[in-house]
Image (cartoon, rainbow, N blue to C red; front, side, top):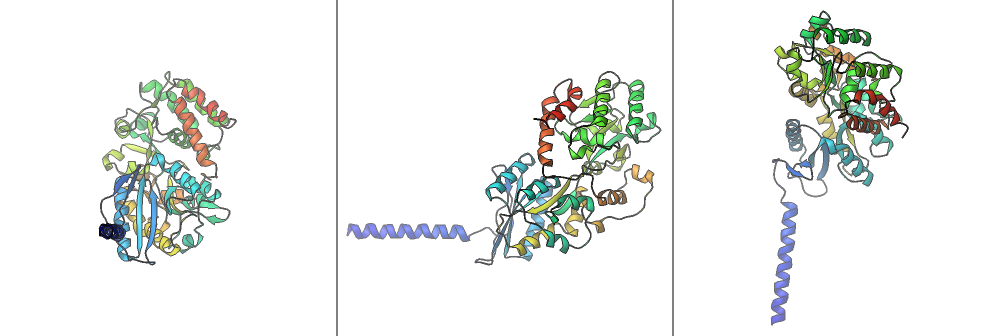
Length: 425
């Protein structure tokens, strides 16, 4: 009798456990809800979908600002309402961890199906065999792509990414100081800038020539690239004669004739507008977020390169069905979503039809109206930033050299030699 009771209790307990597991599998939350944070990633809970073999699951990894991520959540929620058999899980990864995380996961054949990544990473991931070619998707999208944002994604005659947008780094100048020192024009070349540096030091004491964020190693390269040169800093190659001479000029004048400042960039716009700083490097979206009055006090230089392009890629280990992946990508990289990101965040679209190619005068452009036709020309040219598979590795080396030197008083003196030495080590 005791044996039978024990057996009955055991069977009852086992049945209860099976029911709990079954309910945990089928009782997925309905609709979208607030994301949660796990292991440094912001993860969205899965919504309900159709059961059975028809349910398709896609995991997407991005590294974007919270507001932009929330917009992507809303767009994805609308997508899933239209396609109830497709579940899309979004993960927002810390930008400092994104590259290493995506690369290590791809090496193991795990991780997301889709990622939004810097254009500079795409060729390395493609060469390593981590990505699927997207030729059919690139060809199927309506409208024309901007060459400067599409060409970096081409390797071995295949397209390995779907361009989404760009947020270029630009050089902002103090209009009041330019009016005082140059008659209001940005120095068109290095020779003109060198003359300005000397006069600025004599006429405007204690005003830095340029202020660079010490945590962003790219800013010096972008600032140097704003002056025409055969040596393109965005290629991240060893410095040759011209760039070495320019760094020597800055090192010789530093603290004597003028100052090159390393400091946080939180108040750059205020200092530029007040004439307390001659130049600084900013994101295009940051500049466009300013009031018109504030922007009118700045003049903007537009370097060729350092476009900050981002693209969607699909990993070769993905088991998600191509049709489901294509449907989501067509929406997220389509004209409507690109236009929305442009309107809200001033992220430059990758599709030509979204640009109003109207002719504006140089004065209009320098007054910081949204000069679409200038970006249309700039981004539609085949980019001088011709990424190669080793580009992300060189950028990491540049970051390392920069961080090793930026706290030293002699950082400008040593920078070129230390950078060139990194190629021999």
